[in-house]
Amino acid sequence: MPGSFLKSGAAVKGVLPSWAHELLHDSLSTRGCFSIGDDDITDEGYTIRYASPWFCDLFQCESSECCGKRCCNFAGYNCMAGNSITVAKTLGMDVQEAKTRVQFALEHFVQQGKMCRGTWDKPSSGVGYGLVLASNRSGEPFVCEIMLSSRSELRTNWGYTVVLHRDATNEVPVRKLLEAACPGGGFDQLVQQQKLRFLRRFISIGIDSRSAVLCFQQTALDMWTGSVIAKARVTAANAQGSLPASEYLLEQDRLSTQHSFGICDCGVTHEGVTIRYASPGCCDLFELDASDLGGARCQKVVGYQFVSRHVGALAAQVGMDLQQVKEGLQVMHDSIIQEINLSMGSWDKPSSHFGCALGLCYKAKGGTFFVLEFDMLSRTEPHTGWPYFACFHRDVTHEVPVKRLL
Image 1 (cartoon, rainbow, N blue to C red):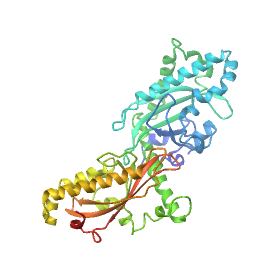
Image 2 (cartoon, rainbow, N blue to C red):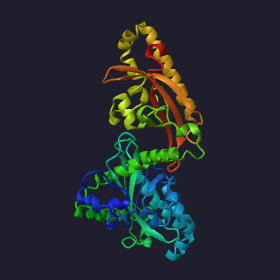
Image 3 (tube, rainbow, N blue to C red):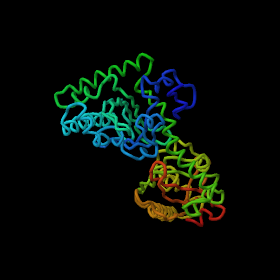
Image 4 (tube, one colour):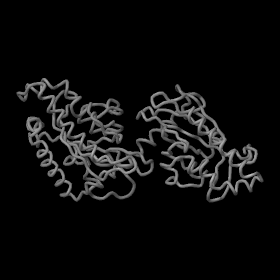
């Protein structure tokens, strides 16, 4: 099936509703043409993190050429700047006038994107719509119909934008678009008329436009966690490359308990780092569900702030003064945050420091205190350019008893 979800890589678990199979048909997007990007739209568009094979076909580019780039390099003013003379001559317009009108259409699209973005923790339920002048590698201009929506990936809480693209030149010729793209030119009316046609196509096949993009959740999840973890597995298996030898050993049982590790954002406060992925071994070690860990600050769910709520029981267990236990926990917390900061570096220059720290943790279900060894480092994922912080865990209570650590 051309443009089907299975071929596009956007398959999800379970039986899909009928509209899901229709969403990427030619009637809604050109040959299953879609992209997924950061929820950070600016005057240069959004940063592309995933481009479907049909996106690459439509814009005549390779995936490696567009991922990590702002979308305006492929749709809108930036990509059209080099072809403005040809477009102007074809339409009988002044070159500067043509550029101004292309920019006008782009700004309208950016405004739509910002309106439907929402906030990082509360993505909007709105669906943005726009018409822009685009160009493929051969320099041929065409009118690109764009539908976009902001969502939050269910398991990693990553805020992202999913965008469908369709070549609408046969319905809105290039000349018609540019003639309307000016103040008082009726551009809003043109876009609204085309949007109504677009929505009627949804309604005709029973698609709820506000929920349709949820079918891209699995692609978004795979894009972030899958590429990071798969890369780590390949690297560990080959034990070759430019990474330090210590990284190849991180998932061995002698360095992490039951392959317990977490992947986090590179942003540390006194509450630690924000957890974006927790391995099954990590959930088992802390006796928590992935939903308890994902999106939470580490010190609030497994570290200092969590343990401090049980400080009375801890003092009684080890036979120490309550104030002495509190002071010991604070020293551990400060040491861990210091190691995280040393391992972090900056977003564009991750640190090469390999951090290691000891901390006291608590298993809520079993009511057990244990000593945890943290091995930590920060890296930039090579495929997406995402800076992340990785932390590997090992229960070392048999080597360092709780009272000795305190």
